[in-house]
Length: 255
Ligand code: HEM
Image (cartoon, rainbow, N blue to C red; front, side, top):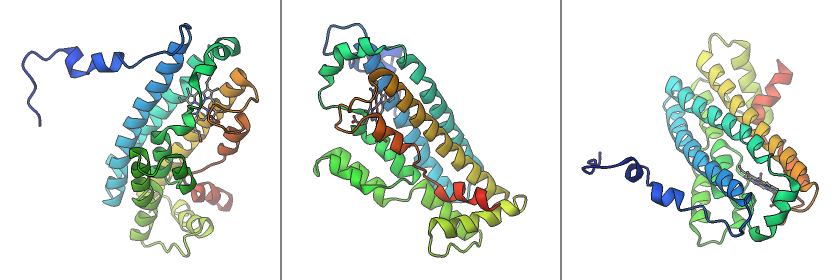
């Protein structure tokens, strides 16, 4: 533990001078501040979610399910807050946004390395996204590490194996077949059953966030291309079907 400096203030403890000095609009327009604050808030929440996910992956690896659920529940609650915050952004009209959109240049939420790391740590490991970061950047090495390390999805597979379930060729189909057995005898396998439902909560909430993003984007820029160079809403719509735990969705059809 680090010793608390004598006379520490609220401003010192929270590094508020740094934090509140970090909103630097590039235009003189009133609405740009909201755009910056909402994105910065998202990065802070992503940081906290990654912090909880690291713990959850470790705990699942030790079969310490109850504390792992606690960390996962916290992530879910943060996801709810993030999904709700689209309502604040939706107060930005197309007229307000178009007035300062040009200052964003080619920057885009697409480049959020923490968002990509969240996907990777959950289990959506699409290495093509690495190419969007220079090979010598800290984002690249961070994402590479996340690709190589155990995701929450992989940790859940190992937990299934420790429970004595065979995973076959680890295809979505054979993983679903293993989970079906857990669901069919949920009382006996209560820990794994509850783990699976917590994982579905995370996927569900991420899909809701993605859905609200598309709606907000359509409301604000229609079907214009994104500042990051994608087709815009059409690209975002294609991400709604991404699932970190596809086997847990597939098993439902089999029950
Ligand atoms: C006026 C508001 C916004 C618009 C018009 C917008 C538009 C877009 C578009 C078009 C993309 C696709 C990439 C591109 O071509 O740029 C994108 C990606 C993304 N945006 Fe937004 N966005 C807005 C606000 C936000 C906010 C507030 C957040 C976070 C709270 C956010 C987070 C992201 C993330 C994480 C991606 C990457 C998604 C993925 O690849 O799955 N965006 N955004």
